Picture 1 (cartoon, rainbow, N blue to C red):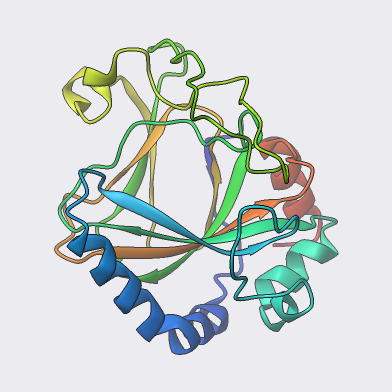
Picture 2: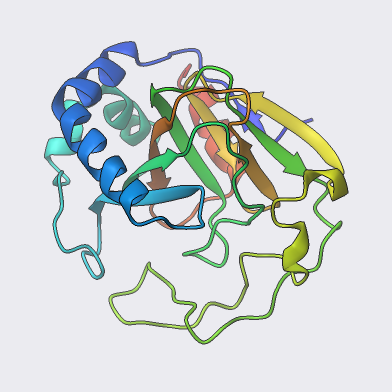
Length: 225
Protein backbone atom coordinates (compact mmCIF):
# COMPACT_ATOMS: atom_id res chain seq x y z
CA UNK A 1 0.00 0.00 0.00
CA UNK A 2 1.39 3.38 -1.02
CA UNK A 3 1.78 5.86 1.82
CA UNK A 4 1.53 9.63 1.59
CA UNK A 5 5.26 9.92 0.97
CA UNK A 6 8.09 8.16 -0.83
CA UNK A 7 11.72 8.35 0.29
CA UNK A 8 14.05 8.01 -2.72
CA UNK A 9 17.16 5.88 -2.61
CA UNK A 10 19.25 8.87 -3.71
CA UNK A 11 19.39 11.82 -1.33
CA UNK A 12 21.00 14.36 -3.69
CA UNK A 13 23.42 15.84 -1.17
CA UNK A 14 25.53 17.47 -3.91
CA UNK A 15 22.41 19.26 -5.20
CA UNK A 16 21.60 20.47 -1.69
CA UNK A 17 25.15 21.81 -1.29
CA UNK A 18 24.93 23.48 -4.71
CA UNK A 19 21.61 25.18 -3.95
CA UNK A 20 22.78 26.39 -0.54
CA UNK A 21 26.00 27.78 -2.01
CA UNK A 22 24.23 29.50 -4.91
CA UNK A 23 21.18 30.84 -3.08
CA UNK A 24 22.12 30.92 0.62
CA UNK A 25 22.46 34.69 0.87
CA UNK A 26 19.39 35.25 -1.25
CA UNK A 27 17.31 32.99 1.01
CA UNK A 28 18.51 34.78 4.13
CA UNK A 29 17.67 38.19 2.69
CA UNK A 30 14.22 37.17 1.48
CA UNK A 31 13.42 35.49 4.78
CA UNK A 32 14.33 38.64 6.70
CA UNK A 33 12.07 40.73 4.46
CA UNK A 34 9.30 38.22 5.12
CA UNK A 35 9.76 38.57 8.89
CA UNK A 36 9.77 42.36 8.61
CA UNK A 37 6.30 42.22 7.02
CA UNK A 38 4.90 40.97 10.37
CA UNK A 39 2.68 38.56 8.47
CA UNK A 40 0.33 36.23 10.31
CA UNK A 41 1.34 33.38 7.99
CA UNK A 42 3.97 30.93 9.19
CA UNK A 43 5.33 29.99 5.76
CA UNK A 44 5.91 31.53 2.34
CA UNK A 45 6.99 30.58 -1.19
CA UNK A 46 9.40 32.01 -3.76
CA UNK A 47 9.00 30.55 -7.24
CA UNK A 48 12.45 30.00 -8.78
CA UNK A 49 11.35 28.52 -12.09
CA UNK A 50 8.04 28.13 -13.90
CA UNK A 51 7.52 26.56 -17.32
CA UNK A 52 4.74 29.00 -18.31
CA UNK A 53 6.23 32.25 -17.02
CA UNK A 54 2.85 33.88 -16.35
CA UNK A 55 3.06 35.09 -12.75
CA UNK A 56 6.85 34.90 -12.27
CA UNK A 57 8.53 38.29 -12.60
CA UNK A 58 12.07 36.89 -12.43
CA UNK A 59 13.19 33.31 -13.01
CA UNK A 60 16.33 32.12 -11.25
CA UNK A 61 16.58 29.02 -13.43
CA UNK A 62 15.85 28.26 -17.06
CA UNK A 63 14.66 24.89 -18.36
CA UNK A 64 18.25 24.27 -19.46
CA UNK A 65 20.01 25.46 -16.30
CA UNK A 66 17.82 23.19 -14.17
CA UNK A 67 19.95 20.39 -15.60
CA UNK A 68 22.75 21.58 -13.28
CA UNK A 69 20.86 19.56 -10.66
CA UNK A 70 21.23 15.78 -10.64
CA UNK A 71 17.71 15.41 -9.26
CA UNK A 72 16.25 17.23 -12.27
CA UNK A 73 18.20 15.04 -14.70
CA UNK A 74 16.96 11.93 -12.89
CA UNK A 75 13.35 13.11 -12.85
CA UNK A 76 13.51 13.81 -16.58
CA UNK A 77 14.99 10.35 -17.14
CA UNK A 78 11.90 9.02 -15.33
CA UNK A 79 9.74 10.85 -17.89
CA UNK A 80 8.78 13.69 -15.53
CA UNK A 81 9.07 17.21 -16.92
CA UNK A 82 9.29 20.13 -14.51
CA UNK A 83 6.44 22.62 -14.27
CA UNK A 84 7.86 24.83 -11.54
CA UNK A 85 10.30 24.91 -8.62
CA UNK A 86 9.83 26.77 -5.34
CA UNK A 87 11.86 27.80 -2.35
CA UNK A 88 9.54 27.32 0.62
CA UNK A 89 10.49 28.76 3.98
CA UNK A 90 8.83 28.48 7.35
CA UNK A 91 9.23 30.17 10.71
CA UNK A 92 10.90 28.38 13.58
CA UNK A 93 8.77 26.79 16.29
CA UNK A 94 5.65 27.06 14.14
CA UNK A 95 2.82 24.88 12.86
CA UNK A 96 1.89 25.74 9.26
CA UNK A 97 -1.63 25.99 7.94
CA UNK A 98 -3.59 22.82 7.18
CA UNK A 99 -4.11 22.87 3.42
CA UNK A 100 -4.32 21.09 0.09
CA UNK A 101 -1.82 22.29 -2.52
CA UNK A 102 -3.50 24.37 -5.19
CA UNK A 103 -2.47 25.53 -8.63
CA UNK A 104 -3.68 22.46 -10.54
CA UNK A 105 -6.97 21.72 -8.78
CA UNK A 106 -5.26 20.25 -6.77
CA UNK A 107 -1.55 19.57 -7.28
CA UNK A 108 -0.86 15.92 -6.59
CA UNK A 109 2.84 15.65 -5.69
CA UNK A 110 5.97 17.56 -4.72
CA UNK A 111 9.58 16.33 -4.69
CA UNK A 112 11.32 18.20 -1.86
CA UNK A 113 14.99 18.67 -0.99
CA UNK A 114 15.91 19.92 2.53
CA UNK A 115 18.16 22.96 2.21
CA UNK A 116 18.50 24.39 5.68
CA UNK A 117 16.99 24.11 9.16
CA UNK A 118 14.95 20.97 8.51
CA UNK A 119 16.03 18.92 11.54
CA UNK A 120 13.03 18.24 13.78
CA UNK A 121 10.57 19.24 11.04
CA UNK A 122 7.92 16.91 9.64
CA UNK A 123 4.86 16.81 7.41
CA UNK A 124 1.58 15.57 8.89
CA UNK A 125 -1.33 14.14 6.89
CA UNK A 126 -4.91 14.30 8.13
CA UNK A 127 -7.73 11.89 7.36
CA UNK A 128 -8.85 13.12 3.90
CA UNK A 129 -12.57 13.23 4.66
CA UNK A 130 -12.23 14.84 8.10
CA UNK A 131 -12.83 18.42 6.94
CA UNK A 132 -14.95 19.87 4.14
CA UNK A 133 -13.16 22.03 1.58
CA UNK A 134 -13.79 25.73 1.48
CA UNK A 135 -15.70 26.96 -1.60
CA UNK A 136 -13.64 28.92 -4.15
CA UNK A 137 -13.00 32.56 -3.26
CA UNK A 138 -12.81 35.56 -5.57
CA UNK A 139 -9.01 35.79 -5.18
CA UNK A 140 -8.34 32.11 -5.95
CA UNK A 141 -6.36 31.62 -9.14
CA UNK A 142 -4.86 28.81 -11.16
CA UNK A 143 -1.12 29.55 -11.40
CA UNK A 144 -0.69 26.96 -14.16
CA UNK A 145 -2.24 29.35 -16.67
CA UNK A 146 -0.88 32.63 -17.99
CA UNK A 147 -4.35 34.03 -17.40
CA UNK A 148 -5.96 34.38 -13.98
CA UNK A 149 -8.55 31.67 -13.58
CA UNK A 150 -10.72 30.62 -10.64
CA UNK A 151 -9.80 27.30 -9.11
CA UNK A 152 -12.37 24.54 -8.91
CA UNK A 153 -11.16 23.52 -5.45
CA UNK A 154 -10.50 25.56 -2.35
CA UNK A 155 -7.23 24.87 -0.55
CA UNK A 156 -8.43 25.44 3.04
CA UNK A 157 -11.12 23.91 5.26
CA UNK A 158 -14.53 25.54 5.45
CA UNK A 159 -14.06 25.94 9.20
CA UNK A 160 -10.93 28.09 9.32
CA UNK A 161 -10.66 27.62 13.08
CA UNK A 162 -9.09 24.19 12.48
CA UNK A 163 -6.31 25.45 10.20
CA UNK A 164 -3.69 25.52 12.99
CA UNK A 165 -5.61 23.66 15.71
CA UNK A 166 -3.96 20.24 15.57
CA UNK A 167 -6.00 19.09 18.59
CA UNK A 168 -8.86 18.68 16.10
CA UNK A 169 -6.82 16.75 13.53
CA UNK A 170 -7.02 13.00 12.96
CA UNK A 171 -3.37 12.50 11.95
CA UNK A 172 -2.96 9.37 9.81
CA UNK A 173 0.63 9.70 8.54
CA UNK A 174 3.82 11.72 8.99
CA UNK A 175 7.35 11.93 7.62
CA UNK A 176 10.64 13.56 8.63
CA UNK A 177 11.42 16.36 6.16
CA UNK A 178 15.17 16.44 6.86
CA UNK A 179 15.65 14.24 3.78
CA UNK A 180 14.79 14.17 0.11
CA UNK A 181 11.17 13.04 -0.09
CA UNK A 182 8.25 12.90 -2.50
CA UNK A 183 5.06 14.15 -0.84
CA UNK A 184 1.40 13.54 -1.66
CA UNK A 185 -0.03 17.05 -1.65
CA UNK A 186 -3.61 16.64 -2.89
CA UNK A 187 -5.02 15.80 0.54
CA UNK A 188 -5.00 17.58 3.91
CA UNK A 189 -1.45 18.09 5.22
CA UNK A 190 0.65 20.57 7.16
CA UNK A 191 4.28 21.14 8.10
CA UNK A 192 5.00 20.83 11.82
CA UNK A 193 8.11 22.87 12.66
CA UNK A 194 7.42 23.23 16.38
CA UNK A 195 10.36 21.04 17.46
CA UNK A 196 12.73 23.13 15.39
CA UNK A 197 14.48 26.21 16.77
CA UNK A 198 15.50 27.24 13.25
CA UNK A 199 13.60 28.52 10.25
CA UNK A 200 13.23 25.87 7.55
CA UNK A 201 14.05 26.08 3.82
CA UNK A 202 13.16 23.43 1.25
CA UNK A 203 13.42 23.26 -2.55
CA UNK A 204 10.16 21.93 -3.97
CA UNK A 205 9.86 20.49 -7.48
CA UNK A 206 6.43 20.26 -9.17
CA UNK A 207 5.67 18.26 -12.30
CA UNK A 208 4.24 19.25 -15.66
CA UNK A 209 0.81 17.73 -16.50
CA UNK A 210 0.30 17.17 -12.75
CA UNK A 211 0.78 13.36 -12.60
CA UNK A 212 -0.81 11.40 -9.75
CA UNK A 213 1.38 10.73 -6.71
CA UNK A 214 1.25 6.96 -7.33
CA UNK A 215 2.31 7.46 -10.96
CA UNK A 216 5.37 9.46 -9.85
CA UNK A 217 6.29 6.78 -7.29
CA UNK A 218 6.08 4.09 -9.97
CA UNK A 219 8.22 6.08 -12.40
CA UNK A 220 10.92 6.70 -9.76
CA UNK A 221 10.92 3.08 -8.65
CA UNK A 222 11.34 1.80 -12.20
CA UNK A 223 14.64 3.65 -12.68
CA UNK A 224 15.90 2.91 -9.17
CA UNK A 225 15.47 6.31 -7.58
